[in-house]
Structure formats: structure tokens, C-alpha cells
Image (cartoon, rainbow, N blue to C red; front, side, top):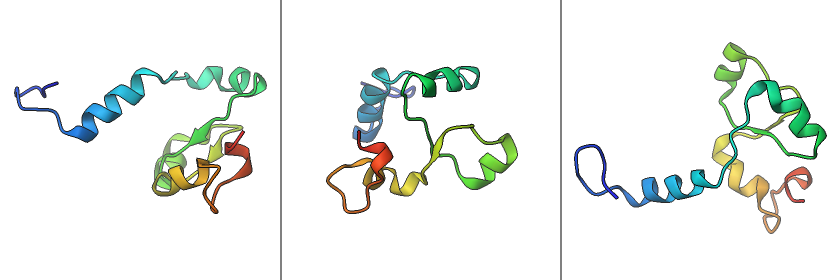
Length: 84
């Protein structure tokens, strides 16, 4: 894979691109129905962005810098809601 400047893509960029291909992006208007259907919605935006743009009702707020530990069921810092 290459960047726009025809330079090799950084490994993290390739990893993120591959991970994002398997993600479903949900529009804000669909959050309530997704939550009702059992989806876990994690809001990882910084507090300043949440204050500016508003909360996502029903979303679990998890700071981005601890996301992996909170959602890993083997982590002593996991949250039960994220470990189904």
C-alpha cells in the first residue's frame, strides 16, 4: 500500500485501514435503534469535542487512551459492559 505521495504506507496506517474495513459506522440518528438491538456504542471523543458537539445518548464514554484496556476482558481494568 502507498500514501498519496507514492511512499510506502506506515504499518499502523495499513493496520487501521484493515480494521476499519470491518467496522460499521452508525449515523447519530440510528444510535437509539442500534442500542435497542443490543449494540454497545463507545464514545471515545475528547471531553471538549463532546461538550462542543453534544453527547451521544446511551453511549458508553471511554477515554481513547484507555479504550483497549477497558474493552479487553482479560484486563484488570476492563468494564463489564464492554466484555460481552
